[in-house]
Image (tube, rainbow, N blue to C red; front, side, top):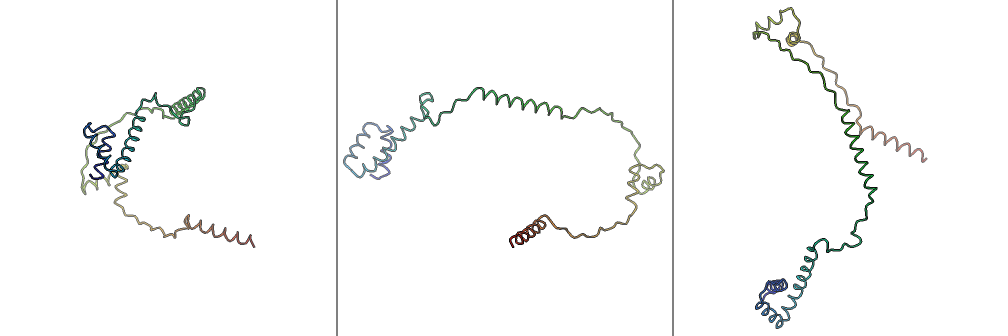
Length: 183
């Protein structure tokens, strides 16, 4: 038999998956072949340790004893109560401050809708808007858009020293001061 087959049969034997006849034949084969026994024994030991570890890990929590290093220290109830009080006070202060910081409700303003007849658009409409005597916002805006105004181009400015340049200058001056102090 091949090594893989022997190892699989050894695992099945240790896990109890072989029937009595197959288990007896496998034991007889291992007794006759020493080389096959050398392959099967390590696999049987691994299966036994694995089964024991699984059985230990799946025990109910009450039966498993914790080692001393894993046991949690007893928490003092007074300390726990103090922390709970600190958290409650902090939450209360947060609510109180948050409540005071909300803006007060503003008075409601009534909306007034004024209906006006639509004005004509086009070149005649502009002439009429510009010739009217009343000075409204939109009329002023329309007049300003129609009139050309000279614009000045700002003189170009050379960029000043940036943060990195100032830092380099500072380090340079500082190193010169250190050199002069050593002399």
